[in-house]
Length: 242
Picture 1 (cartoon, rainbow, N blue to C red):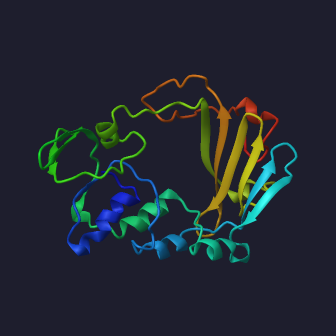
Picture 2: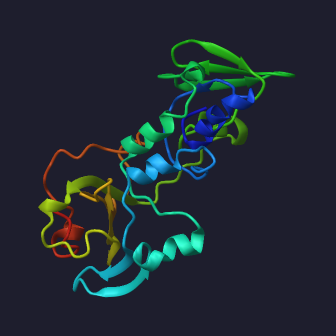
Picture 3: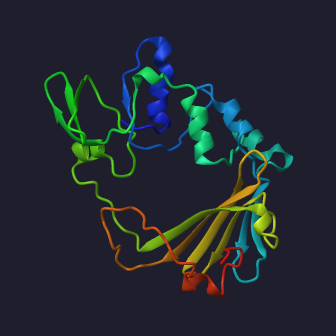
């Protein structure tokens, strides 16, 4: 279930004659890109950050740094590149290796029932599928996991994050835009890194404490329609744009 790399790994094995259908719910990335033979196009669509930098959110000073691209440090240590890319580019590269005949799009699993030798999958569109087995790759609210382990057990941490992508050209004062950077401060932190083949965009995640209670337990995110910044960032982490 799903199109995480686990789901796509199954599809990539089609030439071995043992690939079941995969019903798509979401997409997330994991390892084994080289085994799937999609590493080269992913590297071509990504940028490798120069280093990992930790900064003081008030002074902007570097607290610590670890090389990634610099000196080939990351590849020497882990034997593979560190890739920063847009999810759409990742999906495109992974999708090129998928057997489309075994892919069912737009289907959301809502229930499973186990029998002696098979499992019945029930979908939101009313359809059902009989399968010998089910592998879950359907996201944080996995219906398969709930079937195996009971309630999904998600706990709200009382922190929330604000995500976005910004062209590097709109961040003239941002130091080291080609680095992965953590700006750390009280009650908040900011993570950002370059993405894309030319590193021309910066992906950011700003994390703050609160709200105390999440307004809708059935939704993982809320759309932000106002340009107002969180109070935690008004006098703190400066690279976050207005």
